[in-house]
Image (cartoon, rainbow, N blue to C red; front, side):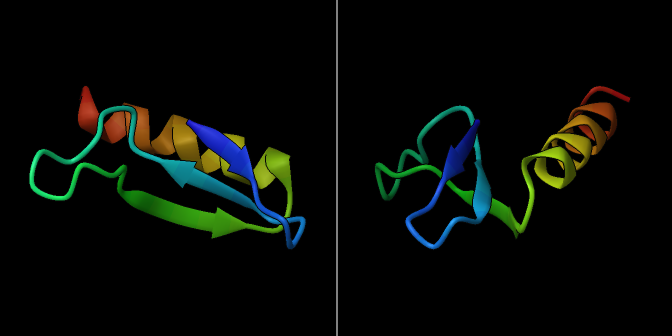
Amino acid sequence: MIRKLKSGEFRIYSRHADKKTGKRKNLGTFSSREAAEKHERAIQYFKHH
């Protein structure tokens, strides 16, 4: 899940909340949405590879 921050950057969060903390994990912050989407595809590739 990609969200835009107030600073204008984009952050990738895990799809499901962490059971211990109840929050989503931060999987990286990027300056552009394209960069965040590219990294999210890489994450999905390695998760399901």
